[in-house]
Length: 270
Image 1 (cartoon, rainbow, N blue to C red):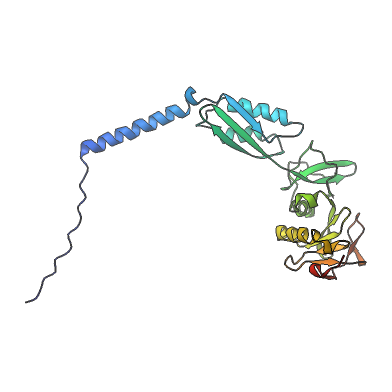
Image 2: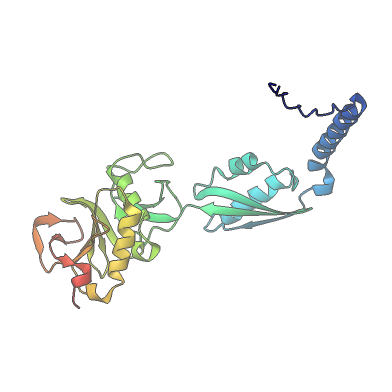
């Protein structure tokens, strides 16, 4: 006798009662209204504002502006757009972060552009940040000079060789950037002359982080002491050496740029 297979019985989910559904919707609506009331109520009004990370001659004005703007907010409704708009006239500000201390405290952390180079035109020197942001009023002494065709009139350095030079310097670790005397495009690509140190050959402007990391490792190795140049165009195979420059290859204002010939950094002797 042939057997007959019955289809599996489907699990039936009970439908909620209309009364229960109605009560749930009412509860959700009440909670939503309570939240909208609470987030802008005096219960969580901002009463104490701390501004950290601001420095420079206009830091006091920035703090006052941020504190005044935050006074109209609550810790549950911090309007970041308003705070960033208030900070917009201060070119050194890159971004803002906030930490809430419920119910009444707020800490605003100012993330600033760090000066990485000095734009130079005649006797004028203007500090510039990593993204090409101009930083008027910031000290430019000791920063590596970059010479644009002309000083920009806006808030940011336009794309071009000067902007690339700034990016090359910005990618350097801070201790090496502090020693940078000049960044110029030489025959082999971009090169940075270090004060009391060698010239760092970087080549093209791509992969700068890896190239500078390789240069820092070489310069930290005692075997590279006395080298005239460090070539990190291929960061995985750095070269340090050179006792004499190749003819005709110079970085203006920093003397001759030594040639790229030499022995691998690991094989150098003091």
